[in-house]
Length: 299
Image 1 (spheres, rainbow, N blue to C red):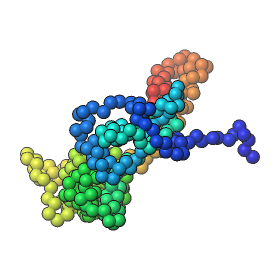
Image 2: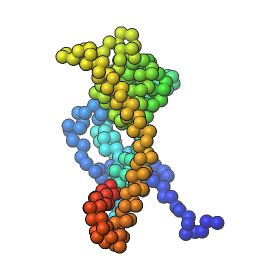
Image 3: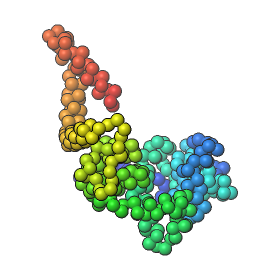
Image 4: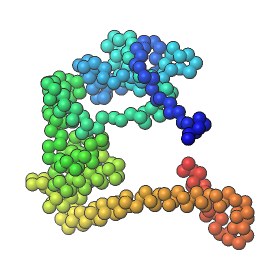
């Protein structure tokens, strides 16, 4: 049976109910500058709140000295938009943790494919393209491209990138590849944790013409011959295979290293063993100490 001492209580990360709080009682962590208000991100939030209201409440935590006062953890731009629109209070989520960094780790930002599905869902429910474009602060052409995001993307590649932040241009580049190459490119993006347009373009440059869709001839690079491009393609293919081999064994290798470092650390912390090594194998002791230092640094 489990004793009371063995029971573990898991604290809730947030209070259960939303609370409407006046802005005078909320202290932001930083000031939103006029330059920030000129950014695309801020204007998109303005458009969204203007068109459909506040979707995601801001997050605050209670001041430890005065429970009637709050510190703003997440939603500085949303708060500033509401102030500019003349609001004086707003519903808030109250976090029981006062660390903004810790809270941000709990946030799952909307990925590109998730936004695509959200747009499709909204259109299915009867929302017009014009209203959606206003809410997202984009033009109709961009909205239509977001709606057609997965046209030409094979399901396997889409599944690999379903929760990743990939730019629209990145998907345009993937559409130039045949399905098998799309899957390989998506796997490499996930393995390398790189979803930039430049990385997608490098994958396209290393793709043989036989793996490109009709009409997607790779861009010619001045000063590079066809033979050099073929060599780059072969080297790219070799690198991809090596990356996958490393990925397959990374978990086991890392575990072995952690265990080995832990064992060496215990050896070096034993005074009798240290003295013995100093007397009989003094060349090993500095190397063992280096491993111990790396272990301490990694912790």
